Image (cartoon, one colour):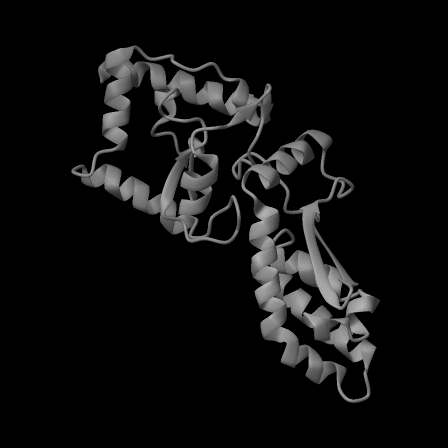
Length: 246
C-alpha cells in the first residue's frame, strides 16, 4: 500500500490535467498487486471509513446526473476500475448514478472511436445552455413528442458531440418520452381548466409558462420536464386544443 500512496497524487493530477480529454488517459499504471489492493479497498464493506466515503458521495448527489430520472444507487467509475485501478477511489472518477444508467446501458464503456461517449458531471459545464430540446407536434389527432440534443444551444461543439453520444447510448429519448407522455396525460385536466370553455389560448400559455418557471427552478434547464414545457408554452398547435389529444 505504501508504494501506491506515493504514486496516487501524480495519477490524480494527471486525471485533472486531462479534463475533457479524460478518455485519452492510458490504463494500467499500477502493477498487479497494487491494482488488486486498490480494488479491494474500494470494495471493502468492513472499513467504516470506506463505507462512509461512499455514502457521502450519494448524499451529495441523490439524483442520477446521467439521466436525471433515477435515484443514485450505484457508484460508476467513469474510467472503469478494471482498467484504471489507480482511480478506483478518486472522487472525480466516481459518479453516483442510477441502476439503469450504470448496469443496463453504460457498464464499462467510456470512449468510442477515440471520442468520449458520456457526459462527465464534474467536467462538462452545460447548465447555462438549453442543450436538451423537445419538439411537440399534433399529427393525425395525436401529440407527437421528440427529444434530442440542440446543436445550436451555444455550447461548444466538442461537448455537444459528447452529449449526442450520451443521449443515444443511454436511450434517453425513449426514457424521456415515457415521462413526458405520462405527465401530459396527468396534466390534461389542469390544461383543460386553463383553456376553458372560451378556448383561451393565452391563458393556457400563461399556465404553461408558470409550470415552466417552476420546472426551471426545481430541475434546471436540461431536465425532460423543463425542455417539454419550454416548447409547450409557445406551441400554438398544442395550446389551441391539441393538448386534448395527449
